[in-house]
Image 1 (cartoon, rainbow, N blue to C red):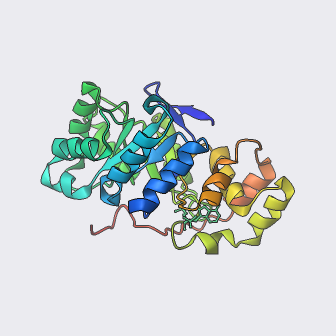
Image 2 (cartoon, helix red, strand yellow):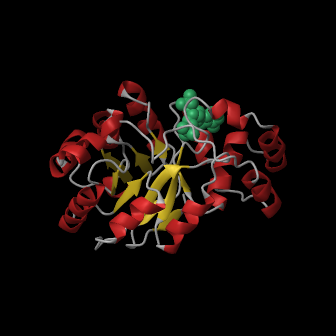
Length: 273
Ligand code: A2P
């Protein structure tokens, strides 16, 4: 596993297991498999409805808690209702842990500036080792910047070869904010379609890897962390097997050129949940 040092010195594994849509028993099994084969970064959210199962998998695993980078997120409704602290405590309870590694604002919803100030307090209390945001555009980050005493460590955003997010990555990098790519394979429903592009199979052949491994490696090679979701043991294993090669410049450029700014998820400037 390779790690990225965040702006507060905490080290984040560059590859994590995404668990959106891996709920109930499926989610629990996926996390157990992932930890068994070397994943050390697990991404969940209050909204995914699987914190209990993720926590149980961590408790049952032989991997020590302090080797696991556990991420969860504050949901929009709590941001709108102002129930920030209660929501955090409820996440801790469901996960059955006494600290989180990284706590994120899930979307720029409600009074996200007030929410950020509460996250700063939680961070300073030591109950989370890092705080960050998801789905923030530059103008949302600028709003936080007016008041922040803690710079977000991460902005977790939709990012894949059809949405390379170069301007937003550059903006974040200048402020010392790392980027984590969600839907790095093109999202839950689109994964097949995007990865069917023959460019990936051509490049895959060259490196003796699969199309998915090429897409994930491209993410690492452009400097972001990736959290592919899979509930399938073979694919969970495949997705971590990306640390023994790097793509050449020409292959990175060819994948970069697939960008069409196409989202599979919601637009952070236009969502209704
Ligand atoms: P599954 O859970 O059945 O493996 P993303 O992380 O971009 O949201 O992509 C997740 C989607 O991609 C899921 O549908 C997942 O299905 C599928 N997926 C995950 N890993 C791979 C892989 N290595 N090859 C093909 N599809 C994959």
